[in-house]
Amino acid sequence: MITNFEQITKEISGFETRVIMPLVVDMLKTKIGKGKATPNHQILLTVNFLLHPDIGAGCKNIISAARLRKVIAAIRVLGCIKGLCANSQGYFVAETKEEFLRCIISLDERIKSQLIVMEAMESQYTELY
Image (tube, rainbow, N blue to C red):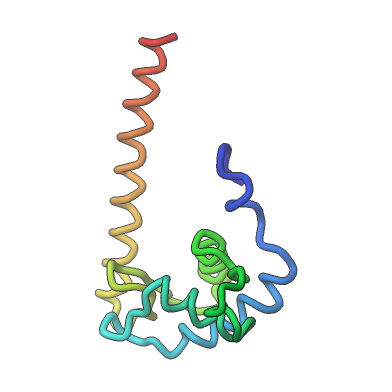
């Protein structure tokens, strides 16, 4: 769980593990190569529609975008789909080692970017308090 984001970063529930995760795995395991990337919002629409066909009639979504990202993180950590990558177009299974390596590099760059922001905020904190 992440401080200040406890509700959306709590561990995935039994429902998310038993119901949502298999749907997402089935959807993404065939998206091989970056050209078949599926955006988060499309996965979200599909999952919500499959679980609640009346979703377009103003019903509440079964799963939010943040919770879907949490489920996808679990799929990656557990290795349910080996080589599950993401880019600005969406999620896909790496077709080549270059695609997979670019995904790893992207994750590393995003982590470094967050560290820069955190270090700046720590410096500001010491100045302010």
